[in-house]
Image (cartoon, rainbow, N blue to C red; front, side, top):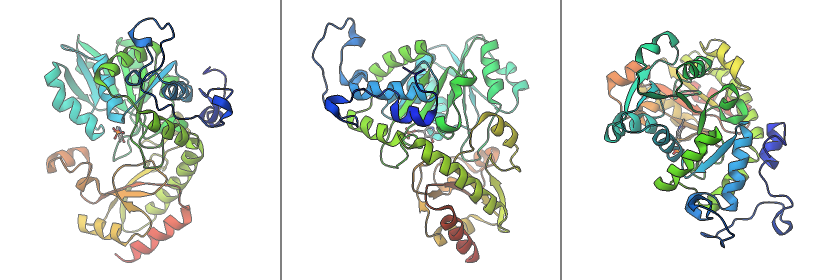
Length: 386
Ligand SMILES: *Cc1c(COP(=O)(O)O)cnc(C)c1O
């Protein structure tokens, strides 16, 4: 089924869908049924029951998600964190060791650095940009390596090809959180990642109105993942499956527009005298520009920038803006803006923030699909008020 459609725009609409449609319906109905009549299924996992993520709404999504990244299999989950924690607990157990990138999404970072010890799992942090340092952190019990395609909030793109090579050479599982890039811009299985994880709350659904996640990758791993998910219970309810399926249909249109718009806005911000530095992999000034160009089809809609001034100046700018909503999360149609030092990274100490390069005046912008000129004009007027 996954080989059937060549291009992602077509896959978003057609892959995995039931044809002909159910009772002639063009769009997939919601099967709001927790259990299904027994049809001779063999084995517990084959029984059609809602928690096992195998009702018609799940199956369509699982097949579509796999097709989007040209992977063998996929499984939708109740949140990005459900996908991430389940994937980590699928690949790692008591006595195992993980190599993890040092600048991960807050929830993931906390799970690894705070909860792992209760499971008897060890970890070491790595600098994703220094392949020469990874070998020294490898242990006999290292089972997996975990990175993100674009990191938050500094938009770093680590040496992803070297990660895959390192994992293959050392026979460990390579895992990547591909939320920020989305399958439109980057498909990790194509360069050899074993597991690609998503918060579908972000670009995949794209409308700031649901929570969902996904694990995409090798069939054998997704099979193990689905058993673990059945135990941990992080399954998605059918109505949210329906909303995610609907949101996905416009992913390519949204993402390409957001790529284009963010590139223009990043360029505008770079030319603004009160801006000290702009982090966006699409800018030539970004140290990750060459790598991002080689790996990605676009640079995404996430930008961060530092002002030449204290945190109060950053707050003044945010308050002077009329279009962006001051709110966490990202990847939706509405442009959102936050101060990571006061939100996503508020739990870190001053020293930890400094070590990660997150200044108090750093602003993070998730570019939505409003008109690009309207957004730049809004920034222009807001800067004039500082
Ligand atoms: C939001 C996010 C997550 C967590 O996803 P939820 O859907 O909120 O559970 C994980 N990774 C990244 C990069 C995210 O942005």
